[in-house]
Image (tube, rainbow, N blue to C red; front, top):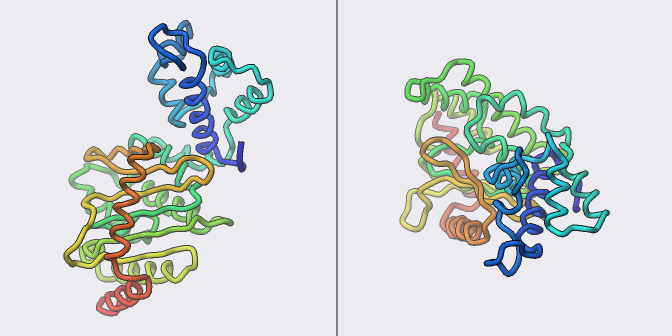
Amino acid sequence: MGAKRGATGRRLELGIQLRHLRENCPPVEPERTKGMTRKAAIKGLKDLSEPTLARIELGELNFRRNVGNLRTLLKRYGVTDQQLIDELVQLNREAPTEEWLTQYRSFMPAGMPHYVGLEAEAAAIMAYHPTVIHGLLQTPAYAKAVYETDRPVEDTTAEFINRHVELRMERKRRVLTREDPARLRFILGEAALRIPVGDDKVMRGQYEELIRLAEQDHISIQIMPFRRGYRAIHDFAILDLGELPSRVQSDNAWGAISTSDKPREVGRFTRRFNAMVGLALGVEESIEFLTELAGRQ
């Protein structure tokens, strides 16, 4: 089953195994040579729908309320190895490491709780943002200024802003300062550094924080300057989850967060990131660039 994981990693590992078992079990539908559809898998299970099974296979849910459904599915998938059954049932049990996230769920857009859980367990993260300092690199003052700027348009409250700033700083702490910190590589568009957010004090503090972080061994920050060459238009992040498949994350226009572990999508965004690495300033050049900006404030 691999290394010990938190709740999100356990759900994801369970979902991956269940999807593999369903897609490779003996067929029960005449038109299939192997495996079964989700519709066939949940037949007769009144409290388990196709969309719910899909979310379980994506690692967003588990069988918290009815582990009997898990056992029934394993039987339908032809699983007779009692050790495997026991391991999957054990994997289904929630780990306690995500209790901190519960208090923020009501404020989070669709898909974000799942992503934040994966983010905290990632072995490595590659992230790019063209116009805003990436959330994991933000200071509290910068994060608050970002939300304050959006407030008239998004019609949010002071409580909403404060809770999101708290969540962002907690995410930052869990990813950047954990006992075995993830290897982090960031590319920031020059516009993310030039566009003023808050006052000069906020920007100077943000530049100084980027310099501090960039000097740490496990963090790499590169600046993509205004120059000709390839650059992605939208922000994205690629999560290396160790033994589990890597995932790419992106946002949509409605603020919802989506992730995909499809090799084609992960490969596409990895190529985008690598293409920008060669065009961006080197790490030392980026620190010098940030130092110059901080000195102007």
